[in-house]
View (spheres, rainbow, N blue to C red):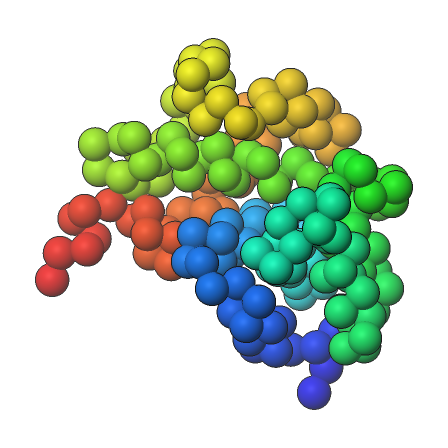
Length: 199
């Protein structure tokens, strides 16, 4: 049974993701992006199921095809098409890779780009807090860590800032929206803190 816009149920997308992505941390990344995308869909009055699905699946092929040369995200989009996913999902997945040749033309595509790197950076900030909890992360903490070039050095700070600008949301506000969305699924991300893990 499909939801709006001919979307497969989320359970099907999650099963596909798990089949293609054995690594828990990459699964958590896609869950974080899904949560952020759903939050922004509500904020913008858009289709939450569609936006969430694109966030959930954007990297599902990454472990099998971990680079542009290997075929990410082209092979994933090709597989989604073969499964009957609507083109809006396939295009959204393609658009998150700057090298794909698919411009980020819609608000959904710009939102995916803005949330992708930022969720990973927020996780990195949370993991160095004493509690390893998202409750200790805010926009100030993220800004501070962005200035530390040795911290999460693979993350392009300028790209994160530019993506928020393209989305039309001030960066600190964008960080707050994404953190709040991620807090909603903190246990699934392993970032609810040590107190939450206690029996």
